[in-house]
Length: 109
Length: 119
Image: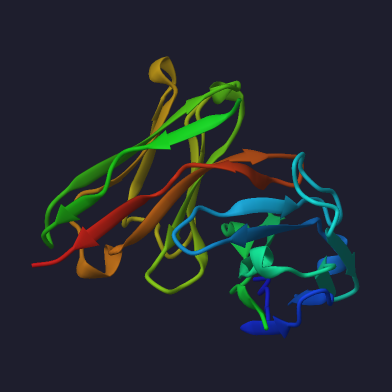
């Protein structure tokens, strides 16, 4: 079955751009969704269907998806974006259905 | 406003049974899949299973098949996750979430229910 691989951690300086990858076999053929989870809180959807943002999510969050890699981009990083980020796809052809990546911890230097 | 309100934290002994709940409001409960997601301490998100309250169609992730039971009561807009015999390895935070299609993402989440299983 499909496996989603994320780097365990990404570090970025304030004001710079963070890029978080999510790798999977032919993931470009699926819609990828991204969640932010801060310590002690429930996850929050930040990007859905590759590159759409829910209401209330800042424009600094954007996504792309092609080939075997999906990417969440966070522009103009500030301390408030420090969190764990998870990618997710719907794999209706298997019993796994809602499939998550392993998560990436974003640290603001 | 969509809200998912989960039952409170639980401390249980191995072998005990447990049923936790997720009460939904602010949307068509019967017509949207609900997912249960486990997060073990310091670990990532894992799907436990999903349920469609309208007809109780339920699917389990292979790791959880036979280990838990997911159900829903349409009359009170509530989904449930239950165990008949808890293990220490069930210790985790459990979230319910509302799935939105067609490419199903979790657009709303409950606050989580912390389950601690210890002798």
